[in-house]
Image (cartoon, rainbow, N blue to C red; front, side):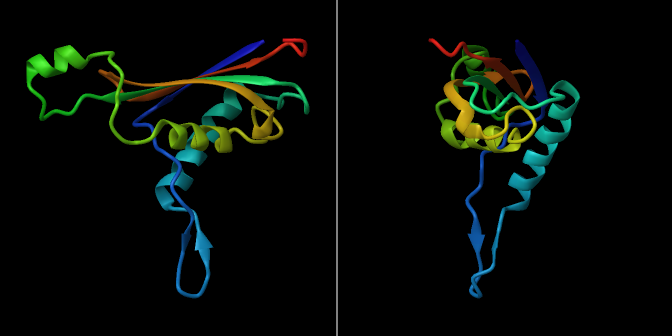
Length: 137
């Protein structure tokens, strides 16, 4: 039972928790907004969270637009190619996993396999695919 979801817009990585001098901690606004956006769109696709203890495979493809400052030749060379610059792939995945807690699965510890890529494309988006794995694999 695969579930797919496409989030339009530039992918955002999970920001570090911020702390002020008084010890008050908060999540950066950009991170909070991105998680909220994923949650809202996932609610339309995912009605019931995957049962506890069922293993889940998460496939995520992050697509970034090619910088406008690049030459036409460089843009053509990089179309659909891997993006090797920031943001870090693990931080991008972390935001998606945290956003889908309680919506796609009960806890992100259920995710036992992750396949993720960062690529250049014409349009910025995040494509998410969630699949329940068989217990004996």
